[in-house]
Length: 405
Image (cartoon, rainbow, N blue to C red; front, side, top):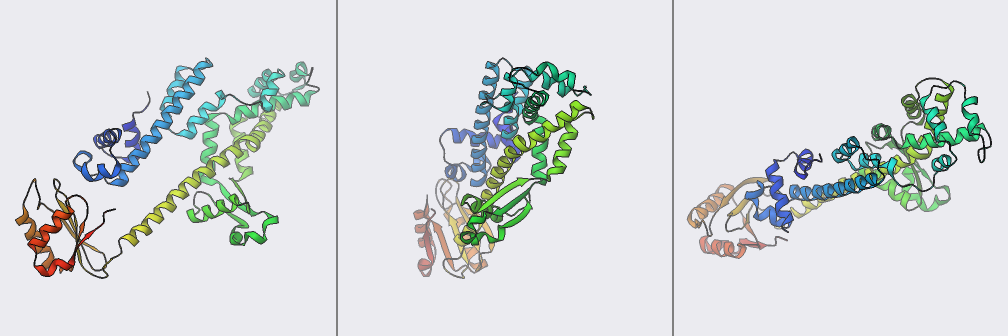
């Protein structure tokens, strides 16, 4: 069975399922993220905009994955190759990369070296080599030397092409190799020699190497820009000899002549099919991660800028006005340090202006407040009028209606 959208999001966010369900219900009804965060707190358990946006993002991911699952299942079903076990595996796979690994053997392919070899009737030879039970190959290969297969080496080459494609499409091997790349791959950058004069801003990366898993986002993005602008060449992979040796150990069962052919096919599969594919995949994943980190850093810097005190160093009582849910109050020190928070209800439906005024008066005295800021959204004007009427006239020029946009 396919995981539900709620369980998918819960696994990634560890939020109570009833909160996720409420957010999904509100989003499907057309509610915007700011609206849900501000006006539906009682339904969502006061989830903030970041959490709600993440739920919306994961919903989109879930829809894309399930749509892809359905397409893959239909394609394999039409080929009459869909088994109950494969269907179950596909439905339970929510990682897009692994899902594509499962689909790879069933993908309609352009003409490849392997398909050409199959057309020459060499697939039975490939199957025989894959068993790795033959010590001497002369008698095994002889029946295939005919027509467009002129000699034993041509027959073995065709069989190796078939095996290389088979190895490259093995989901288990791809998963292991992907994990190896993620943990151990290095990103190498080199100067495009004909561009040296124009590429000076990338001189730090003319001969550069660093582990991809730990490279800072700004450095990775700079290298990728250099590649995009044509100044750098980039290469991503773990230690080649070590990785190929481990791959051989996984596919070769013994030291027979047929196993040696499988080993050659594995080496070809890695160099020609697996390494380029996984390199592109990892570069894309790493760039996406670096972009996200860069956006977060930008957001943090922007937040600090927006939170900079517009009145200079003054203690501020800030009010987020509202009717039904009350006016949320935050008190800030002269350097922007948070001091205290609370909620008052000067407006209907609760209408407790006397108690609200006492709270405001207490906070002003206790924290030596020097200015009051009121958001200009719902109930903003009413809150401004109420404070003008309630506080001493000397406060009029120290109460500000500020933009919430």
